[in-house]
Length: 386
Image 1 (cartoon, rainbow, N blue to C red):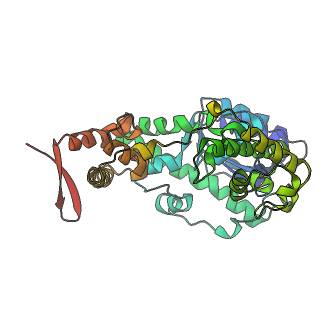
Image 2 (tube, rainbow, N blue to C red):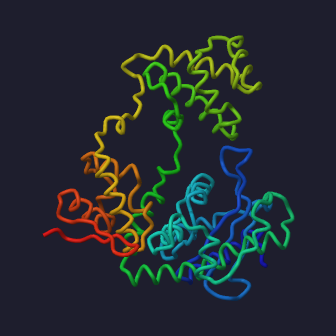
Image 3 (cartoon, one colour):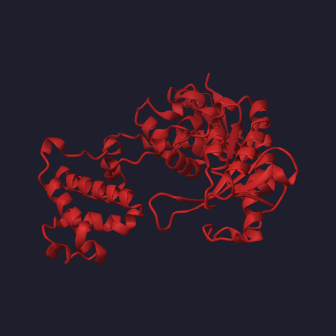
Protein backbone atom coordinates (compact mmCIF):
# COMPACT_ATOMS: atom_id res chain seq x y z
CA UNK A 1 0.00 0.00 0.00
CA UNK A 2 1.55 3.25 -1.17
CA UNK A 3 1.24 6.33 1.02
CA UNK A 4 2.28 9.64 -0.55
CA UNK A 5 3.83 12.10 1.87
CA UNK A 6 5.83 14.32 -0.51
CA UNK A 7 4.63 16.84 -3.07
CA UNK A 8 6.84 15.45 -5.85
CA UNK A 9 5.37 11.97 -5.47
CA UNK A 10 1.84 13.39 -5.54
CA UNK A 11 2.66 15.39 -8.67
CA UNK A 12 4.01 12.24 -10.36
CA UNK A 13 0.84 10.27 -9.58
CA UNK A 14 -1.42 13.09 -10.74
CA UNK A 15 0.56 13.40 -13.96
CA UNK A 16 0.06 9.70 -14.60
CA UNK A 17 -3.63 10.02 -13.75
CA UNK A 18 -3.97 12.47 -16.64
CA UNK A 19 -3.25 9.62 -19.05
CA UNK A 20 -6.47 7.90 -17.93
CA UNK A 21 -10.11 8.70 -18.57
CA UNK A 22 -11.00 8.84 -14.89
CA UNK A 23 -9.65 8.82 -11.35
CA UNK A 24 -11.61 7.66 -8.30
CA UNK A 25 -11.44 9.84 -5.19
CA UNK A 26 -12.44 9.57 -1.55
CA UNK A 27 -11.47 11.29 1.70
CA UNK A 28 -11.31 10.63 5.41
CA UNK A 29 -11.85 13.62 7.69
CA UNK A 30 -12.80 14.77 11.17
CA UNK A 31 -15.40 17.37 12.05
CA UNK A 32 -16.44 16.67 15.61
CA UNK A 33 -14.39 19.50 17.13
CA UNK A 34 -14.30 22.05 14.29
CA UNK A 35 -16.62 24.06 12.07
CA UNK A 36 -14.71 23.13 8.93
CA UNK A 37 -13.73 19.53 8.25
CA UNK A 38 -10.11 18.56 8.88
CA UNK A 39 -8.86 16.63 5.87
CA UNK A 40 -6.92 13.62 7.16
CA UNK A 41 -6.50 11.39 4.11
CA UNK A 42 -7.16 11.40 0.37
CA UNK A 43 -7.52 8.14 -1.53
CA UNK A 44 -6.94 8.04 -5.30
CA UNK A 45 -7.06 5.25 -7.87
CA UNK A 46 -6.76 4.99 -11.65
CA UNK A 47 -7.73 2.01 -13.84
CA UNK A 48 -5.42 -0.96 -13.37
CA UNK A 49 -4.45 -3.72 -10.94
CA UNK A 50 -0.89 -2.66 -10.10
CA UNK A 51 -0.05 -1.49 -6.57
CA UNK A 52 0.87 1.98 -7.83
CA UNK A 53 -2.59 2.41 -9.41
CA UNK A 54 -4.16 3.10 -6.00
CA UNK A 55 -2.54 5.39 -3.44
CA UNK A 56 -3.14 7.13 -0.16
CA UNK A 57 -2.22 10.80 0.15
CA UNK A 58 -1.42 12.10 3.64
CA UNK A 59 -2.37 15.80 3.79
CA UNK A 60 -1.09 15.93 7.36
CA UNK A 61 2.45 15.11 6.26
CA UNK A 62 4.82 18.01 6.91
CA UNK A 63 5.59 20.00 3.76
CA UNK A 64 3.10 18.22 1.51
CA UNK A 65 1.17 20.52 -0.86
CA UNK A 66 -2.09 19.33 -2.39
CA UNK A 67 -1.74 21.72 -5.32
CA UNK A 68 -0.86 18.90 -7.79
CA UNK A 69 -4.13 17.23 -6.82
CA UNK A 70 -6.04 20.48 -7.25
CA UNK A 71 -4.48 20.88 -10.70
CA UNK A 72 -5.75 17.41 -11.56
CA UNK A 73 -9.21 18.41 -10.31
CA UNK A 74 -9.12 21.37 -12.72
CA UNK A 75 -8.20 19.14 -15.68
CA UNK A 76 -11.49 18.62 -17.51
CA UNK A 77 -10.01 15.77 -19.54
CA UNK A 78 -10.21 13.42 -16.55
CA UNK A 79 -13.48 12.43 -14.86
CA UNK A 80 -13.34 12.60 -11.06
CA UNK A 81 -15.39 9.78 -9.58
CA UNK A 82 -16.77 10.03 -6.04
CA UNK A 83 -19.46 8.26 -4.06
CA UNK A 84 -21.80 10.62 -2.15
CA UNK A 85 -19.51 13.52 -3.00
CA UNK A 86 -21.09 16.41 -1.13
CA UNK A 87 -18.92 16.41 2.01
CA UNK A 88 -15.77 15.72 -0.01
CA UNK A 89 -16.52 18.63 -2.33
CA UNK A 90 -17.17 20.95 0.58
CA UNK A 91 -13.67 20.20 1.88
CA UNK A 92 -11.99 20.84 -1.47
CA UNK A 93 -13.92 24.04 -2.08
CA UNK A 94 -12.99 25.37 1.36
CA UNK A 95 -9.39 24.11 1.58
CA UNK A 96 -8.31 24.47 -2.04
CA UNK A 97 -10.90 26.77 -3.61
CA UNK A 98 -11.36 24.13 -6.29
CA UNK A 99 -14.33 22.20 -7.67
CA UNK A 100 -13.40 18.84 -9.25
CA UNK A 101 -14.76 18.75 -12.81
CA UNK A 102 -16.05 16.85 -14.62
CA UNK A 103 -17.64 15.01 -11.72
CA UNK A 104 -19.35 11.63 -11.51
CA UNK A 105 -21.18 10.67 -8.31
CA UNK A 106 -21.90 6.95 -8.14
CA UNK A 107 -24.61 7.43 -5.51
CA UNK A 108 -26.60 9.71 -7.82
CA UNK A 109 -25.96 7.42 -10.79
CA UNK A 110 -27.05 4.37 -8.79
CA UNK A 111 -30.36 6.05 -7.94
CA UNK A 112 -30.93 6.65 -11.64
CA UNK A 113 -29.95 3.06 -12.47
CA UNK A 114 -32.41 1.35 -10.14
CA UNK A 115 -30.39 0.69 -6.99
CA UNK A 116 -32.86 2.44 -4.68
CA UNK A 117 -32.85 5.47 -2.42
CA UNK A 118 -29.39 6.92 -1.62
CA UNK A 119 -27.74 3.53 -1.92
CA UNK A 120 -24.66 3.09 0.26
CA UNK A 121 -21.19 2.33 -1.02
CA UNK A 122 -21.06 -1.01 0.78
CA UNK A 123 -24.24 -2.13 -0.99
CA UNK A 124 -22.84 -1.19 -4.39
CA UNK A 125 -19.60 -3.03 -3.64
CA UNK A 126 -21.59 -6.18 -2.88
CA UNK A 127 -23.97 -5.91 -5.83
CA UNK A 128 -21.61 -4.65 -8.51
CA UNK A 129 -18.04 -5.47 -7.47
CA UNK A 130 -19.12 -8.75 -5.78
CA UNK A 131 -16.89 -8.01 -2.81
CA UNK A 132 -17.15 -7.28 0.90
CA UNK A 133 -15.67 -4.40 2.90
CA UNK A 134 -14.02 -4.82 6.29
CA UNK A 135 -15.90 -2.21 8.34
CA UNK A 136 -13.74 -2.49 11.47
CA UNK A 137 -11.86 0.75 10.69
CA UNK A 138 -14.90 2.85 9.78
CA UNK A 139 -15.07 4.86 13.00
CA UNK A 140 -11.37 5.31 13.74
CA UNK A 141 -9.49 8.56 14.37
CA UNK A 142 -8.04 9.35 10.95
CA UNK A 143 -5.90 12.17 12.34
CA UNK A 144 -3.68 9.84 14.38
CA UNK A 145 -0.37 8.73 12.94
CA UNK A 146 0.88 6.24 12.03
CA UNK A 147 -2.13 4.72 10.29
CA UNK A 148 -2.56 0.98 10.81
CA UNK A 149 -2.52 -1.50 7.94
CA UNK A 150 -6.21 -2.13 8.60
CA UNK A 151 -6.98 1.57 8.24
CA UNK A 152 -5.01 1.77 5.02
CA UNK A 153 -6.71 -1.28 3.55
CA UNK A 154 -10.14 0.07 4.48
CA UNK A 155 -9.37 3.47 2.97
CA UNK A 156 -7.99 2.04 -0.27
CA UNK A 157 -11.08 -0.15 -0.69
CA UNK A 158 -13.12 3.04 -0.95
CA UNK A 159 -11.47 3.84 -4.29
CA UNK A 160 -10.42 0.47 -5.72
CA UNK A 161 -13.93 -1.01 -5.80
CA UNK A 162 -15.20 2.36 -6.98
CA UNK A 163 -13.46 1.77 -10.31
CA UNK A 164 -15.63 -1.29 -11.02
CA UNK A 165 -18.77 0.50 -9.84
CA UNK A 166 -18.08 3.56 -11.99
CA UNK A 167 -17.46 1.55 -15.15
CA UNK A 168 -20.63 -0.49 -14.58
CA UNK A 169 -22.82 2.54 -13.94
CA UNK A 170 -21.30 4.54 -16.80
CA UNK A 171 -22.04 1.66 -19.20
CA UNK A 172 -25.59 1.37 -17.85
CA UNK A 173 -26.21 5.09 -18.32
CA UNK A 174 -24.97 4.87 -21.91
CA UNK A 175 -27.16 1.84 -22.57
CA UNK A 176 -30.28 3.54 -21.20
CA UNK A 177 -29.51 7.01 -22.53
CA UNK A 178 -29.70 8.48 -19.03
CA UNK A 179 -26.29 10.12 -18.75
CA UNK A 180 -27.93 13.55 -19.14
CA UNK A 181 -30.18 12.77 -16.18
CA UNK A 182 -27.16 12.38 -13.92
CA UNK A 183 -25.52 15.51 -15.35
CA UNK A 184 -28.67 17.47 -14.51
CA UNK A 185 -28.50 16.29 -10.89
CA UNK A 186 -24.79 17.03 -10.59
CA UNK A 187 -25.28 20.64 -11.73
CA UNK A 188 -26.41 21.60 -8.21
CA UNK A 189 -23.72 19.46 -6.57
CA UNK A 190 -20.95 21.19 -8.50
CA UNK A 191 -22.27 24.72 -7.92
CA UNK A 192 -19.93 26.51 -5.51
CA UNK A 193 -22.86 28.37 -3.96
CA UNK A 194 -24.03 25.02 -2.57
CA UNK A 195 -21.09 25.10 -0.14
CA UNK A 196 -21.35 28.71 0.99
CA UNK A 197 -22.94 29.27 4.40
CA UNK A 198 -23.87 32.89 4.98
CA UNK A 199 -24.47 33.93 8.60
CA UNK A 200 -27.39 36.16 7.61
CA UNK A 201 -29.25 33.13 6.25
CA UNK A 202 -28.51 30.77 9.15
CA UNK A 203 -31.86 31.50 10.85
CA UNK A 204 -33.69 29.64 8.10
CA UNK A 205 -32.38 26.33 9.46
CA UNK A 206 -33.69 26.98 12.97
CA UNK A 207 -37.05 25.35 13.67
CA UNK A 208 -39.46 27.48 15.68
CA UNK A 209 -43.15 27.41 16.47
CA UNK A 210 -43.39 31.16 16.80
CA UNK A 211 -43.38 32.80 13.36
CA UNK A 212 -43.99 36.40 14.41
CA UNK A 213 -41.73 38.89 12.67
CA UNK A 214 -40.47 40.40 15.93
CA UNK A 215 -39.50 37.00 17.32
CA UNK A 216 -37.85 35.90 14.06
CA UNK A 217 -35.84 39.13 13.93
CA UNK A 218 -34.13 38.11 17.19
CA UNK A 219 -33.71 34.53 15.93
CA UNK A 220 -32.06 35.88 12.79
CA UNK A 221 -29.57 38.02 14.71
CA UNK A 222 -28.72 35.26 17.18
CA UNK A 223 -28.24 32.69 14.41
CA UNK A 224 -26.07 35.12 12.42
CA UNK A 225 -23.87 35.84 15.44
CA UNK A 226 -23.50 32.13 16.21
CA UNK A 227 -22.61 31.22 12.63
CA UNK A 228 -20.07 34.03 12.23
CA UNK A 229 -18.50 33.27 15.61
CA UNK A 230 -18.29 29.54 14.83
CA UNK A 231 -16.72 30.23 11.44
CA UNK A 232 -14.17 32.69 12.77
CA UNK A 233 -13.14 30.38 15.64
CA UNK A 234 -13.49 27.19 13.56
CA UNK A 235 -15.63 25.46 16.18
CA UNK A 236 -18.97 23.64 15.77
CA UNK A 237 -21.94 25.99 16.07
CA UNK A 238 -23.33 23.74 18.82
CA UNK A 239 -20.28 24.66 20.94
CA UNK A 240 -21.49 28.27 20.92
CA UNK A 241 -25.08 27.43 21.79
CA UNK A 242 -27.58 24.91 20.49
CA UNK A 243 -30.81 25.58 18.64
CA UNK A 244 -33.01 25.02 21.69
CA UNK A 245 -31.00 27.61 23.61
CA UNK A 246 -31.23 30.02 20.67
CA UNK A 247 -35.03 29.73 20.62
CA UNK A 248 -35.15 30.20 24.41
CA UNK A 249 -33.01 33.35 24.14
CA UNK A 250 -35.24 34.75 21.40
CA UNK A 251 -38.26 34.16 23.62
CA UNK A 252 -36.82 35.62 26.82
CA UNK A 253 -34.90 38.57 25.31
CA UNK A 254 -32.09 38.76 27.88
CA UNK A 255 -30.60 42.24 28.35
CA UNK A 256 -27.78 41.51 30.81
CA UNK A 257 -25.38 38.77 31.85
CA UNK A 258 -27.57 38.36 34.90
CA UNK A 259 -30.48 37.51 32.59
CA UNK A 260 -28.28 35.02 30.74
CA UNK A 261 -27.51 33.34 34.04
CA UNK A 262 -31.19 32.41 34.37
CA UNK A 263 -31.24 30.52 31.06
CA UNK A 264 -32.01 26.81 31.41
CA UNK A 265 -30.40 25.76 28.14
CA UNK A 266 -27.43 28.05 27.60
CA UNK A 267 -23.98 26.52 28.06
CA UNK A 268 -22.05 27.87 31.05
CA UNK A 269 -19.26 29.22 28.83
CA UNK A 270 -21.79 31.27 26.86
CA UNK A 271 -23.06 33.18 29.90
CA UNK A 272 -20.01 35.43 30.10
CA UNK A 273 -17.20 36.82 28.00
CA UNK A 274 -17.34 37.44 24.26
CA UNK A 275 -20.14 34.95 23.58
CA UNK A 276 -22.35 36.59 26.18
CA UNK A 277 -21.54 40.00 24.71
CA UNK A 278 -22.39 38.71 21.23
CA UNK A 279 -25.69 37.26 22.42
CA UNK A 280 -26.77 40.45 24.14
CA UNK A 281 -25.81 42.57 21.14
CA UNK A 282 -27.70 40.23 18.80
CA UNK A 283 -30.82 40.30 20.97
CA UNK A 284 -30.67 44.10 21.06
CA UNK A 285 -30.34 44.32 17.26
CA UNK A 286 -33.28 41.99 16.79
CA UNK A 287 -35.45 43.83 19.30
CA UNK A 288 -34.70 47.18 17.64
CA UNK A 289 -35.29 45.91 14.11
CA UNK A 290 -37.62 48.00 11.95
CA UNK A 291 -40.83 46.02 11.32
CA UNK A 292 -40.30 46.62 7.62
CA UNK A 293 -37.14 44.51 7.87
CA UNK A 294 -38.64 41.63 9.82
CA UNK A 295 -37.80 38.23 8.30
CA UNK A 296 -40.77 36.33 6.95
CA UNK A 297 -41.33 32.67 7.65
CA UNK A 298 -41.99 30.52 4.62
CA UNK A 299 -45.74 29.94 4.78
CA UNK A 300 -46.06 28.52 1.28
CA UNK A 301 -47.22 25.14 2.49
CA UNK A 302 -49.68 26.71 4.96
CA UNK A 303 -51.33 28.56 2.09
CA UNK A 304 -51.54 25.51 -0.15
CA UNK A 305 -55.00 24.18 -0.85
CA UNK A 306 -53.89 20.60 -1.32
CA UNK A 307 -56.37 18.12 -2.76
CA UNK A 308 -55.53 15.14 -0.51
CA UNK A 309 -57.17 12.57 -2.81
CA UNK A 310 -55.18 13.85 -5.77
CA UNK A 311 -51.99 13.87 -3.71
CA UNK A 312 -52.60 10.20 -2.86
CA UNK A 313 -53.16 9.37 -6.53
CA UNK A 314 -49.92 11.11 -7.44
CA UNK A 315 -48.09 9.05 -4.85
CA UNK A 316 -49.41 5.85 -6.39
CA UNK A 317 -48.48 7.11 -9.86
CA UNK A 318 -44.98 8.01 -8.67
CA UNK A 319 -44.41 4.52 -7.30
CA UNK A 320 -45.70 2.95 -10.52
CA UNK A 321 -43.51 5.12 -12.74
CA UNK A 322 -40.45 4.74 -10.52
CA UNK A 323 -40.84 0.96 -10.50
CA UNK A 324 -41.26 0.88 -14.28
CA UNK A 325 -38.31 3.15 -15.00
CA UNK A 326 -36.05 1.75 -12.28
CA UNK A 327 -35.36 5.18 -10.79
CA UNK A 328 -35.47 5.91 -7.06
CA UNK A 329 -38.76 7.60 -6.13
CA UNK A 330 -37.06 10.19 -3.93
CA UNK A 331 -34.92 11.32 -6.87
CA UNK A 332 -37.97 11.81 -9.09
CA UNK A 333 -40.24 13.69 -6.68
CA UNK A 334 -40.47 14.45 -2.98
CA UNK A 335 -43.63 14.35 -0.91
CA UNK A 336 -43.56 18.16 -0.89
CA UNK A 337 -43.41 18.17 -4.70
CA UNK A 338 -46.53 16.01 -4.88
CA UNK A 339 -48.42 18.27 -2.48
CA UNK A 340 -47.47 21.32 -4.55
CA UNK A 341 -48.71 19.68 -7.74
CA UNK A 342 -51.93 18.58 -6.00
CA UNK A 343 -52.42 22.22 -4.91
CA UNK A 344 -52.19 23.46 -8.48
CA UNK A 345 -48.54 24.56 -8.54
CA UNK A 346 -46.73 23.90 -11.82
CA UNK A 347 -43.30 25.43 -11.21
CA UNK A 348 -42.15 22.19 -9.59
CA UNK A 349 -38.93 20.29 -10.23
CA UNK A 350 -40.82 17.01 -10.69
CA UNK A 351 -42.50 18.45 -13.80
CA UNK A 352 -39.26 19.55 -15.48
CA UNK A 353 -36.25 18.10 -17.27
CA UNK A 354 -35.77 14.34 -17.26
CA UNK A 355 -38.35 14.02 -14.48
CA UNK A 356 -41.02 15.19 -16.89
CA UNK A 357 -40.48 12.16 -19.11
CA UNK A 358 -40.38 9.74 -16.19
CA UNK A 359 -43.25 11.16 -14.13
CA UNK A 360 -44.31 14.73 -14.85
CA UNK A 361 -46.01 14.18 -18.18
CA UNK A 362 -48.23 11.38 -16.86
CA UNK A 363 -48.84 13.33 -13.65
CA UNK A 364 -50.41 16.12 -15.70
CA UNK A 365 -52.35 13.62 -17.79
CA UNK A 366 -53.67 12.01 -14.60
CA UNK A 367 -54.82 15.40 -13.31
CA UNK A 368 -56.53 16.07 -16.64
CA UNK A 369 -58.27 12.69 -16.59
CA UNK A 370 -56.46 11.38 -19.65
CA UNK A 371 -54.83 8.41 -17.89
CA UNK A 372 -55.94 6.10 -15.13
CA UNK A 373 -54.40 3.62 -12.74
CA UNK A 374 -55.25 -0.04 -12.36
CA UNK A 375 -53.90 -3.01 -10.44
CA UNK A 376 -52.29 -5.88 -12.28
CA UNK A 377 -51.13 -8.51 -9.83
CA UNK A 378 -48.78 -6.81 -7.39
CA UNK A 379 -48.17 -3.85 -9.71
CA UNK A 380 -50.00 -0.64 -10.57
CA UNK A 381 -50.27 0.10 -14.27
CA UNK A 382 -50.93 3.42 -16.02
CA UNK A 383 -53.43 3.22 -18.86
CA UNK A 384 -54.89 5.70 -21.34
CA UNK A 385 -58.48 6.76 -20.82
CA UNK A 386 -60.47 6.68 -24.05
